[in-house]
Image: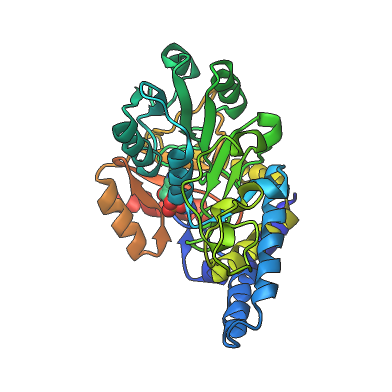
Amino acid sequence: MVRKVFDQLRRDFPKLSEVTYINTASLGLPPKCCTDAVMKWLEEREYGNIFWLKWEKIREETKQKIARMINAEEKTIAIVENTSWGLNIIANSLKWKKGDNIILNDLEFPTNIFPWQIQAKKHSLEIRVIRNKNGIIDIRDIREKIDDKTRVIAISWVQFSNGFVSDLTQLAELAHSHDAILVVDGIQGVGAIPIDVRKMDIDVLVCGGHKWLLAFPGAGFMYIKKEILEDLDIKFGGWLSDADPFNFDYREYTPAEGSRRFEIGSPNFAGIYALNASVEYLLRIGVEKIYERNLELTRFLLEKIPSRFKILSPLIDNTPKSSIILLAVKDAKKAYEKLKERKIIVAARKGGLRVSINFYNNEEDIEKLLRNLSEVTE
Ligand SMILES: Cc1ncc(COP(=O)(O)O)c(C=O)c1O
């Protein structure tokens, strides 16, 4: 897509006129249609429950749109609060056997570590941790650690700190060759990088809505492959996750069909309105075009960055695969604060400065960041 189109899209993010925001990996900017949708919901909410059925319809539409974005069937999608909750759902619902093992790595965000550790303690499981090599999780190391007692490889598609992108197709193949499943934390990729859960044969994909999906905290989604769903233990139940949710009589619980069984009670409709609007917005632009533009801007950053700032993100052949770049900056926290004073927002992570570029950024944002970064670190 020509740059002009992306320049026009900047108008959908009104606060870009006040801040230089290169920090989508922390929280994305919601487009105007997203905040408008939430305002609309608040207005409807003033009528009590009158709009409930409409809200339910929007919930279904949201799932259809998410399904389109990741190439899944609608029934395999559940709206969940956030990535953390989705990961806890799957970790709790697997039928563990003593001595099973789980493969993690040392780059994961804590939310993709703790739920597994809890299960490990409870069911005497082993956690096998892959150590990164210069910011890379090497599939060869996973291959060495995996065996027939491995039940899960749990991994972030894109690493939050340095933007390393794992090859999910290869990981799924490896997991399946040992009858294990691949559980993916997708929050740093979905919405910014094209994904096809069926083609890649991913088993579980969990994603909060507030980063690259440009929606609000408190509403994200979870995809569970059909073949896996029926094998999961029923650990949670509520009125809405029953097959007959509007029957309020005393009776035996029958889990609803598909991933809906994990949506147990009154949903965060405001968050769902936000997610619905933002996902539609992203689909309209096209995730492939977004990815292309994000990589173009990332290459621009890499070209322009003064050599005194070492790039800590692993770049194979100097080619970025995501738009999250970690820079070695002396006293990164101080640099972050000083940039913030100048209304330039990035993040301090793992001792460096993390820049996360999205299509609503432009070359001028990056030049401004680099100019100011040089000044504040002189
Ligand atoms: C890779 C990764 N997973 C999960 C989270 C947090 O997810 P949530 O707040 O949706 O539970 C983050 C937030 O920074 C993250 O970077």
